[in-house]
Amino acid sequence: MNNAYVLLSLFGPLVSLVKFISAVDKETLAWIVILQAIFLMFVLGYEIQKYFRGKRPTFFFRFFRKVRLDVTLEKDREFRPQVLTMIIRNVGKHEADIDAPVLEYRKIWSTRRFKLNGYNGKQIYPMYIGPQKSHQLSIETSTFHMYDKEVKTYYWARILVTDVEGRKWKSNSVKLRKSLVT
Picture 1 (cartoon, rainbow, N blue to C red):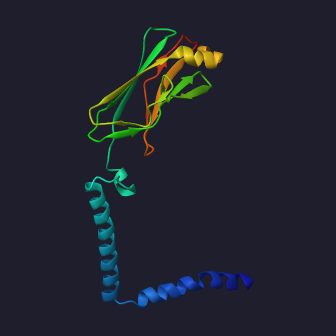
Picture 2 (cartoon, one colour):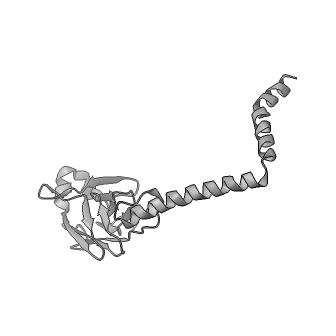
Picture 3 (cartoon, rainbow, N blue to C red):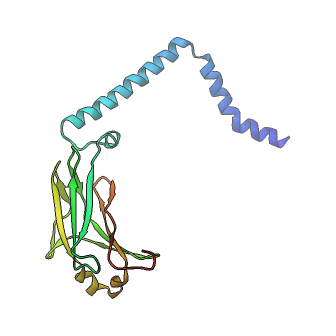
């Protein structure tokens, strides 16, 4: 008996809402749909206007703006390279505003990440890369070996790049030394 009262108290407001909706005639329901469509068109028009005025696009148009970056990592010699060269190319039509890239050293079960802020103590990130432009950075591995001796034992390295809006790109993996796996 108590279960029936609990169910009625929970579903009572829903039953009254169903009665209200069924009591609305077709003309009123059509006006409600038309007003919602006008409101939606107003919001989309505002977003389109912001986009074409050159302001930063908002949430709706972030998905339509495709930023394409080509991130590559090259080494100067086959094993135990002294210099790694990172090249970021913007191959898309839109500009890219990238944050500081991350150099990731990997072993079989462990990783170590270093954030690259610039060179010679100068911070150059976040960086703007226009369409069809590229950015190149030479990375000396000896600085990371001095910081942490265990980095010499890692097998692979790659670059992780993110932009200001949160998109992510990964470079190719570069083999640093021979392993049991490869």
